[in-house]
Length: 205
Image (tube, rainbow, N blue to C red; front, side):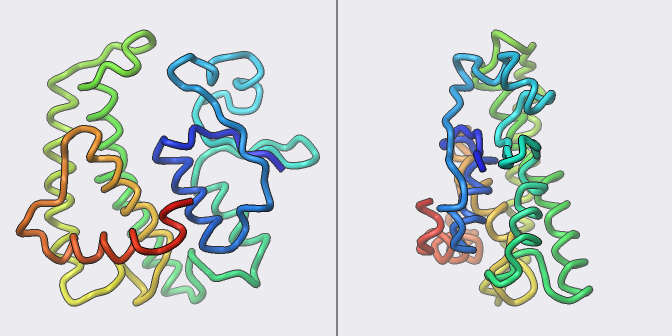
């Protein structure tokens, strides 16, 4: 199978880290897409993902799967003998779904909007609204404060073990640095958690 990605982008990083934790990086060929040059806008890429986003996975039979968590779900279900990252019991799966939604809606999305609307990276294909980007940045800072409180006395975000929630939050914290948002000195729980995740081999995938 093939995975079309931009290695430095946060969504592909989430997939790589997920696959690394499960020992599956050798299951796919990774093909780099240059977003700034618009390689994701070509007819060939749009045929694989009409949303024009990375990553996209193409199976051996030509079937294409877009969206980060959809790709992760494919690997979770296809390789049940590898470490579970999306929950084992009904309770774990429900708790993870809750956290994945919170991280996606209130952390990752506003980080992405802050990047798109304040840096001008995609100004050739969108109308950036700086004020909106700045407002999204404030939402990111609020969520990091919330996450710091939630991590008090905990090693991981939920389920008392490493999961996809940790991957998604970790890659978002790392990405937020691009727009000047960093863990604050008083957010000691968040910093300790970040350091733990960063020390995992998968963080370098």
